[in-house]
Image (cartoon, rainbow, N blue to C red):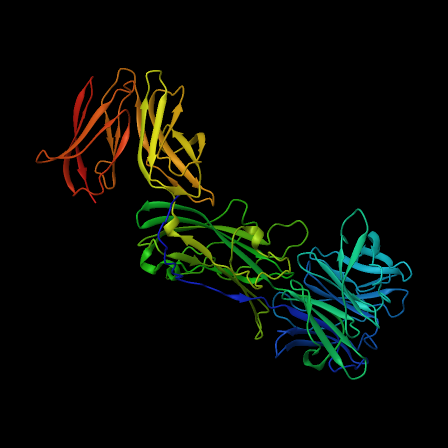
Length: 630
């Protein structure tokens, strides 16, 4: 519930923290110079889409392979290894499993054994691993029907463990499946470039289902023959060579479905087959609640979700959360951080020195975050951040971002990954589903609109009726907007609360509300109201104590000394009206009211000092000494 702001407000953006950066690494199988088939090698290229790509390593395969024809390369996210498959005999697949140091120091294998790791009679075409380590390939293409098999096969046994028909679209059948490549994004989407004269780009749907056929969606016909494809930062790099004097690539933007002009291939190498490893983060942040403490102070609760969106283990995972940039260092206090329930399967530890101002890193240094493989749930974590913000301005929108950061490759050419949080729940970590959380419009800070805080409670009281029920009554400032409902909450000890009922808010001009609690027990009864907005922000009323005692008894004055409110708990009296008077030490009347039950009295406007509270009704009269301290 919020006050309606009739006059136009001035919105001040205090901070827009934006940190972007995903840095995929292209794995290229080919040769170190364009179209040199007799010098086969594979290279790992950093910053592949930049003007200055860097080959982290160039690994010579010539001792094991005579040339680069009919050879495929694939990266396995499950074990962080590179696989090279030689199918030149067309009767078997010889596959080497190679360690390149991921996710630590990237380097060529110390030696490549003469004997392959696996040799199977199954002949793979354009094989690629998904994030769970399952290996996919094509076989048995029928050019007249546009159908082939989509196979998942077991590397250790060479057996096909799942197969289905893959249907290509009429009018856009590939000329062959022997020329081309598969690409599987960390989020599971599969793309392929297949055929020559011409080569076509497809997205493959339903490939991993156990029912129904797989289908290919034709995206476009490529200008030149392309034999390789890799996923890089929300784009596909589709690569090719004329096997003579030209090596090139195109960028295909997954979200926009647009193809770039022809670009010379990185470092003048020859691209024959490609894969990639993708260190990538996705971060979201949302405001769970804002509770008004006083007119310029609010307790805020945020949720921060961090996910490994890539296909490689991330080193040095951390989150930077600078509250001082948003609210001012002097205005931040009561900072608390915890992991949400079920939100730390990775076993990470929090930085105990984090305070949001002078220390802004939320995790201890040197920790890793696994990638998503199979059914594991340790590839993400969720934190709850609580803080108190003071000296708030009602005409300001406070923007705040959490920044996730990590690295791979601890050598000189360290690869740094970062992502600035996108506003909202987990579902908005990658809204356009292109696998890149740093795409345009995906790093929106989380706003806090102080001028749209929840309702102001004017009064809150409770009384025992003649029938033995408790009548809870409250009043709020009007008009109000964006309001959803009230929750009436009850407690026997003032600490553990239960929900009695809910009242929807349908009239923004209604000021007074009430709720009847039936069959109330004897003794102390605590009541409070929780009001929630449509966007989830909420605020509590003051707590009132009702004394349901047989034979009456004296009133109880709570919060004495008092700061903002003086709480008065009246004994059960059947709803008899009690006159309440507050006098200063000179006998001057500073406040009076007629109440039918327990209530709270605002004393924030009164000077500090000693006062006398008089309570009188038809049955009794009593005086209490109270102290006001600010």
